[in-house]
Length: 118
Image (cartoon, rainbow, N blue to C red; front, side, top):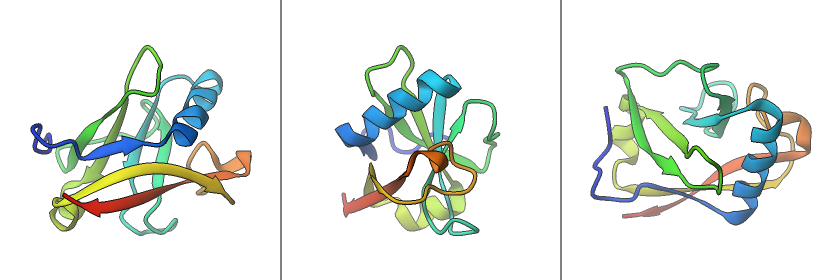
């Protein structure tokens, strides 16, 4: 399922894009799934493509151009999207411990979401 294609729903800061480029060099193509609050709060979780399997219950929010050959897709569960459907999300990065299953974990940085109403 794809979110409303006429509205840009997701963006990335240059600092986060830089980290994504570094992580892609280590892990290959990446994707994000916005966590629904279990285990790691509501952090954007970054995975190598194929390590997190999306399904019919996930919404593609958009694809981030971070200056790589392949854009980085961002997903969220459909049930969570119902709460966030009027929100624009920006993936940013700050110093701190990354989420346990997210590839930035060992870097000393962590991805986070900044949001604003559409």
